[in-house]
Length: 230
Length: 409
Image (tube, rainbow over all chains, first blue to last red; front, side, top):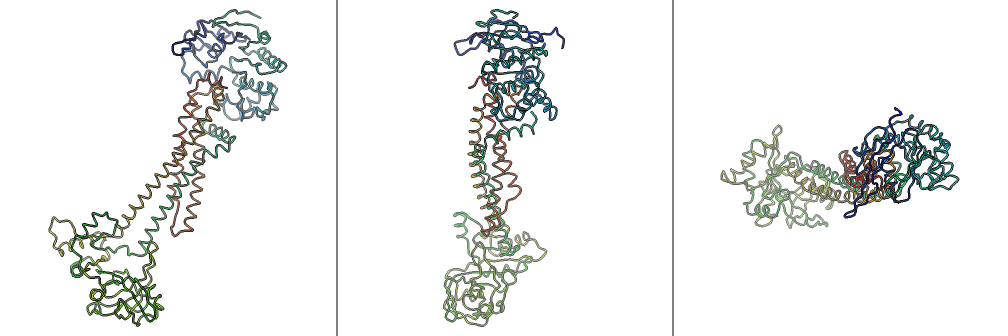
């Protein structure tokens, strides 16, 4: 991939939710670029529109107006099944609540994106073990989520996000459900992943977490309030 | 997601909620059990009917009578009643004129008390038979002989006893030569018939047969000149050909105009079997109705649980969508679960129904059996029910907005 192509290039993003008579403008024109290898944090109060922006960037939702290209692909006009393929191929999601399948082992959880990518059998298992090893949980591969600590669960979730070798790691309050010590470990893991060349976009309302990133974008009332190198 | 993988993953999800899965499949299980065992029973009944017809009645013999041997409605019966009797003279003429008949015989019947020595049996079926009865091969003799045409002409007071009646009055081998009293008249026993067995549990060997002329003179109900005629076609002649000849000849004998409808019924074994099968087809329709209702109930149960499951797993659905599952993957996942539940119930129901059928086969005279077709249908239907009632929950799951689903508490 040519370094000149940004991972994210969004211009004039608007998102309007209409509920009958009332319509709410969650995003009021956002321009946003993210280059390959960047580690950026998005901050904003609840209701600022940061979740909406995250959903659009994650291809879970489409903007009402504006254009968004991910790895040079125009996303806003894609059909649902194409969006699913884009999510599968280019994005690794890390959620605040981990969202592991409770009845599947750590390894099976990590394999799940590869199942949808139609990667078969041994290759799938090997790649899952590889990323579990990367997050230091190779010995927990057969454990179910309820046999793991919160930090371990989030590491399994990060392994799941990494297993498809995505162009973008998208983390939504990844330390929000963890105590500060465990949160620090997870944050350290993100920093290491960034050092290894991963592009990371992290949404948080915790300034301490935001400081870990090299760039901080503040969102307020559906607009970019500030965009600073940290 | 590839199909085998999807099925395995669906099965794993169902295993983790074992009790609910089993309870959900119970509806289909009971439905399929009912279908399989009822179809098994109806099949058994049909086999039984056929075997009874084949064993007791000669397959080629057809019968002519005023009243139909099948199952008529009241109007048809009333119409038959208005027709002139079939008389013994007509039977004799038919016997003389037919060229395709190996044997023609005629019969009538009434009831009377039969006694011998100190023993007496009430309500015995008295049969007035022509000597040609033995040629139609519907009766054969174990001890002694059948009566002759000469005895018939002479109104001889001789009789042949059914084996059950002979046993009731004395020992069957000892009966020929003894005298019995039938309806107040003294007869000499000349023979004892070979047991015919029973048809539908009704014994056929409790009769006393006397020559037709003797019967007409001494034992017939007053005003009853109606006989039933039985014809055995010649070897090499089809039943249909012989039947058609009998029909045309009898129309001529009875002086029917060209355009008039027949005023008698011809009943073949095939025809009786067919009308019997019509009754059984009715039973089969009832079975299908029961099956449809129970499968419907089972299907609604599956839909209900699948809807609960979809709601419970909203966040899982959102997660899967975020990780790259297409709508179609979600649909297939939930459809697979519904079909597995349903087919699981179907397989168990098939086994249970098979068990019940075997039990019925052992415990009743019905040779009940499960046909491969019934088994195939049961499984096919249960899979269809799973698909049909799984579609809506699966569609509901796939239609979810991933953003909403991920936010669901």
